[in-house]
Image 1 (cartoon, helix red, strand yellow):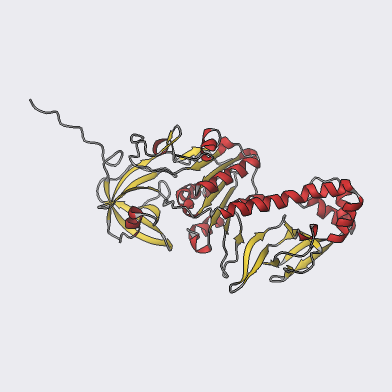
Image 2 (tube, rainbow over the protein chains, first blue to last red):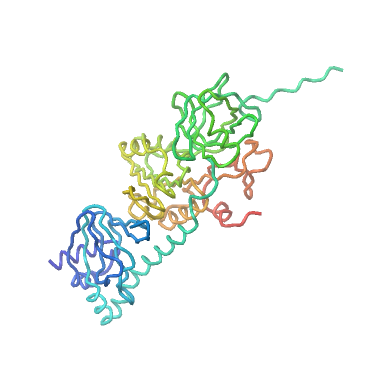
Length: 156
Length: 283
């Protein structure tokens, strides 16, 4: 079972190309999980306890806007990662994440992953080198969206 | 002494417009309209996808409008116009039967012939899909191993255009993905930066051609992301817009560095001088 999970972990773009033993370390903290359409993978303000490797289905990140309800601020597709707030204090989710359709993930226990990273700095560094580009990419995408990309006066 | 008669300019190709009539019109969004024009008399020369016409709203002015139809298609020639200024406002309000002046076609094209074996990634922002529409029609009908990916971004779902075309392109096998910056409650599609769709798109960067049209800031980031993924910048084509006036490279109003975009553009190769120019402040 763990070998199968190690394969799934190694095949996910976040960990693609990692040595088998590293993928196995991650898989040792992981299990498969499924969510039905509309179901929450994580909820704003709740303890952030898992890293989800999205394998199937799309997930919407939502923020509650008073007076407007839930606003979808970003959607994530298979091959992407859901949930990064477990990395740093206060370890609480900053958004909701809702399955837009039936979703399949590899769910990695965050406390287990962090413990292994603390115990094995080489593993921890390898993990950070995979996770930080995701954060950087999302930060840059947010910056670019602040430019109001489609708001100029082009008439053709 | 008798004066030598001036040689009249050939109508349509340079500075003298031909009369065209609105055959039909279709509202695409709250501020975008497609008008289909048919010649009242003499016709303009055939256009290639990506080229533009200079359209005159009589009594108001003239403006460059990309052709949004398909080259070689029978019937009136489609132009999709966003109502953002006096001339585009007048053009977009023309009724069926209304008459405009038309010159052209002008400029460079997407040049999609010969791309049967290539993967093609089209990235459009907002009404930037209009100048690409004819090229996508041509590419979606090609026979060859090349894959076609079309990524479209808009600010909100109601600013997405050409829904019927999107359905048709998907039916023909294209991977068409739409995303918006700000979702509405009834929107079940993607939300996020248009280039974020690149990560899950299937194409081989080594044999990919990129076709980009939209606001320049979007094209700048999209071109850079394609290049980061391994697409040769010389195989990325973008459509640039400036103040096109004469259409013939004479007046200089559309100058961008060494380029006169009405003649050397609107479709130019990204990379080198163009990439540098897009990062500069113009004065």
